[in-house]
Length: 507
Image (tube, rainbow, N blue to C red; front, side, top):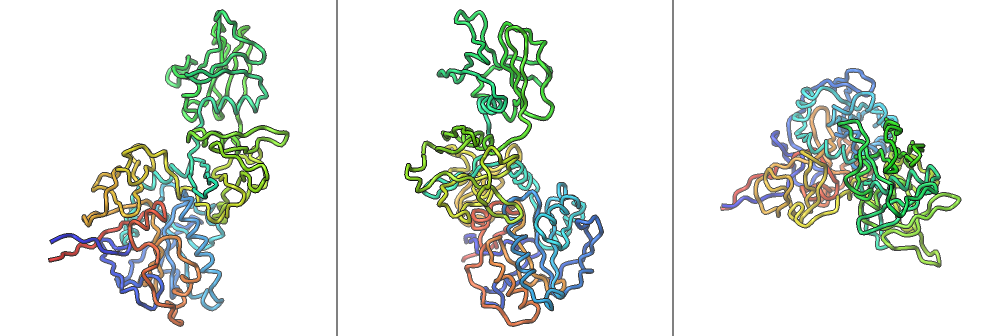
């Protein structure tokens, strides 16, 4: 006998939720299972909300978390379209509820901000994990907190999405070097600092006209702050090798100067001090990050050369990865930023220097269709080394939360989340980052399930109307998104449901 993995709903778990054949009155997956049990959670207004008190003929229930910058906003906006597409009569018969899978972060206050941001006025619920654990089990949802942590950590950091002239998109983490921070502060402070470059990286020759002597009686020394000893110390690596996220307080000091003249590190902002041979000092902090800082740090961290000259209007993108727009201006590098409200890319109305505190930006040829640029985190990956994830995926997260995002047709190797192996029929339980299941309930009975975020609002609306007793929608087909674990992983990024292959035996 052999184990054969079959196509299953991503919601199948211990509750033994069963899907009817795809030929049904619904376009989504029709379910056959028991009613869910009633529960009470806390809504975005810090008020208790008991599910049964909604008292609607049909209820749409989704699972989300606010730190999710890709899938969740798309689902929220799609549900808004469904809600707005209902007739006045049907709108009174249909309720909407969203339940957080990240209660530690999703306080009522945070959910209230999310509701206001997305114009989603229906109840968004959170609560104690013990209570929510029962709710997740009630719906057949397995929440993997480790993977949510990794997803949240990734989405806390700003990124740059780079689309090359061939249309290939890559999302780059902000990884500024010490030299990048040096350049940013030098430009912001309008200091004149001359440097040379050797096989070991950059070294300073003069600052504000004060040049290190050729006899090496003193030199410009790089210092960083030791958080343990609370003292300024000579860096044991060159400025090009410094991780500016870990060491954002820099000093260029004349080697013969008195270090006691240095000020304490800036408590909140990256800064750089200069200590001259006569013990006078200069100090400047970078109070706000802009699109130029983010672009420089992301491209440099990815090892991609850029040319971003400065003009009277600020910096402009001349070339990326040594690729410049043609001299006939048939295309040029264009800056876009992510609109979280609309969950879409928009052309920036300002230059990169005027784009303050950006979170997600994109550089692409101006001829690029912005709707085709992947949303933040959809293509996020660190530079893949040989052997990472067995060569069939990329790593996400860090520390204990690090895990592989496996390519389609591959899966985690047992309990080893850092290795991807072919999906060869081995029976494994999968857990991924957050739920991409949206339910349509008739009364308290889950009747239809939609997986993923790529469904069309008009199709979902047809199923809602069918559940209300209207004309049946077109028959479902095998093309409904989310049928397999591979699709759910590769097309949707992280999800927080368990996908449990059904055990079958072939004699």
